[in-house]
Image (tube, rainbow, N blue to C red; front, side, top):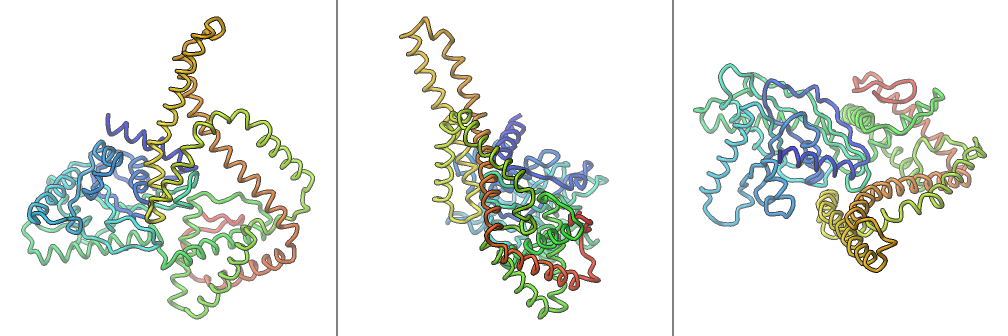
Length: 487
C-alpha cells in the first residue's frame, strides 16, 4: 500500500510538472520473468520518478546511500523499498571491508528481487549529469545481472536487460514534455549470458566489462547521444526544417510533433549524420555549417521552420478576429475566475523556481529541486490559506451570526479545493497567454521581415535538397510520410 501510494503521489506530481508524458514500448517488458531496467541519467530524481510511475509493475531501485539523507527524497526512497548502494568514492574513512560487505548485501538483495521475478532499475553511469553524451559506465549493472542469473531457480527463464530512453524537450521547465521509451531486451551472446559462481576473478571482471559495453551500445541506440549541446540542437533543427519543407511540398498543414515523432525524427537525423560523417566528413561539415547559419537566423527572429510559410495576409481578418477574442477571454473574462488560484499558488510557484535556480549546481538539478520543493511549498500554501479562512470565518460568524451561517469547516474545505483547482487553471492560463502573445509576435515579425523570411524559405528548400541527396542510399530509422511526419 505504501508503494502504491508513493507511485500515485509521484504520478500526480509529474502530471502537474509535465504538460505531457508519452510512453512507448511497454510490450517489450516480459511478464514471465524479472530483469534490469537501465537508462542514462540526465535529470536527477525526475528520471527514476518517470520510470517508477510508468513501468508496468513494481520496480526496485538501487541508489547511493547518501541520497537517503536528503529530506523528503530519503523518505520517499525508503517508502518504495529503494536499496542503498555504498560506493567506494562516497566513503569518508571508516572500515573499507565493512563498506564492501554492506555493498555485497545490497547487491544480493537487488539480485534476489530480480531472480524472484521483479525488476530493478539502475543508471549505469552512476551519477546524474547535464551533458548530451554518456559519462563512463560503471560495471554495477553487469555485476547485478550476473548475480541475479546465479540466484534464478533452475528451469526458470533468465532475467532480461531492458534499455530505456528518457527524452525531454525542456527538462528544467514546468509544463514541458517527456518521453519514456522502453526498448527490446538485449540479445546477449552465449558467452555473456552467465558467469559460473566459481569463475576466476579475471573471467568475472572480463565478462562484466564486456556486458557493460553491450549495455552502453544499447543505450546509445536508445538515446542518440551527441558530442555537444550545439550539435544536439542542430540535429533537431535538421529534423524540423526537413519536416516543414516536406509538408510545404505536399501542401499539408501539420501541427507540432509529439514526443514520439520528435524522438524518431532525431534518431533518423542522428543516424544519417553519423554515417555520412564517417563516409564523407568534409561535405558533412560544410552542410552542417549551413544549417548552423540557418539556425542562427531563425533564432534571431525567434521563429520556427513552419512559421516561415504562414503569410501575414492569409486569412488576416479571421486570424485577427480570433486573436482579439482570445485576448478578451484571457485578459477580461478569465482573470476574475483565477484570482484565488493565483493568490494562493503564485507565491509558492515563484518561490520554488527561485529556490531551485539558486540551489541547483547544474541545469539538470533544477527540475528535481522544483519537484522536491513543490511537494513541500504547495501544501503549506494551501494549509495556510485554509487556516486563514477558518479563523476569519469563525470571527465573522461571531460578529455577524445572522449573516454568516455556513460552517467554517465547509468554507475551509471549499477553499482548499478551489486553491488546488485554481492553481491548475492558473498554470494552464499562463500557457495560453504565452501562446497567444507568441502568435501576435510571430505575426508582427512576418509582416516586417518579409525579405529575410523569403530568403530563409529559399535556404530551407536548398538545405532540404542537399540533405535528401546526402542521405540517399542510407537505411535510416522511421518512415517519412507525404505530410512530412516521421513514423
